[in-house]
Length: 180
Image 1: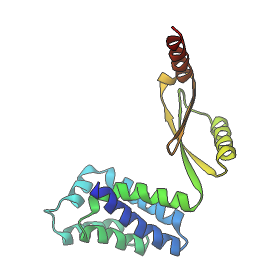
Image 2: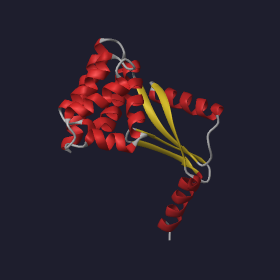
Image 3: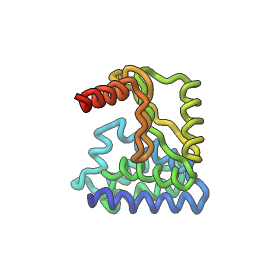
């Protein structure tokens, strides 16, 4: 729980800097690229998160990789994470940053699960319908689950809309069992 609270503070800090500079999207991309790059090499994250590794060595490592390739603010933010021994929170900070940025931009994230991959037309139709219903811009995160048989399950925040064949069969089963 403490780590989540710390991650929120750090993500809030970089979010506020990005908002002041009107660079919410740019900083979000940079933060995600840094995270993905480092997480693609598990040894790098283990190295940067290891409390026994000297801070100067960690900073030298980050300098070789990122100096001049990302914004100065993002570079200094990474150095701050090293100084405060919070680098292991990078993934959570990235996730929370995007939540803050999406909220500030009026964007909702909808997790859409289908039995087979949704085509571009389907994705557009789902997004338009959700935008109509919510009154906000919606970005889709697509998932697949063959157990749905057909249809779609949408989750936005704590709301879940089950339009799947499996969901309808489960509802029918429960109704039949209740009428015994």
